[in-house]
Length: 117
Ligand code: AMP
Image (cartoon, rainbow, N blue to C red; front, side, top):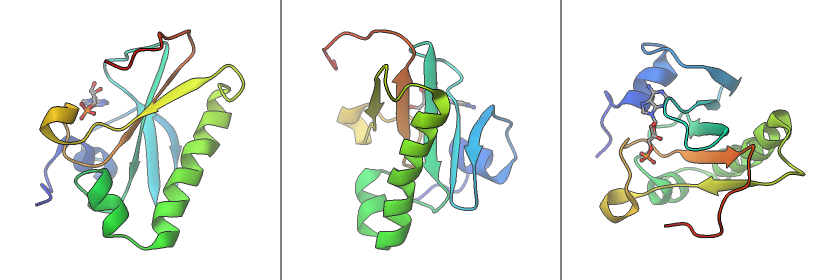
């Protein structure tokens, strides 16, 4: 069940400030408040969705397709397409998800290790 008062819902509604990297009617990308790498941007679709599965299962193809295409737009805007980057989406308890609105982390700007965990 989606929590309308989660932090990212409030950021989307403009009730909590963020450092915007890219926004349009459907998506918002903003800097992570506690960056894990030199570049650490979070991306959210504006539809109400708890996690990856909720987003993919309960939204039409255009919305899903558009979100993933926009990740690529942001990667190009950040200038990390050629140097490389990592995209992560944490889901649920074992995945370590803290904020229950589906989001991706885009990490880059420095060399990262090959281990995820
Ligand atoms: P996750 O564990 O995948 O749910 O990640 C949540 C992320 O949201 C963490 O990396 C936090 O640093 C980040 N975060 C939490 N609150 C804010 C905020 N107000 N603005 C930007 N990033 C935030």
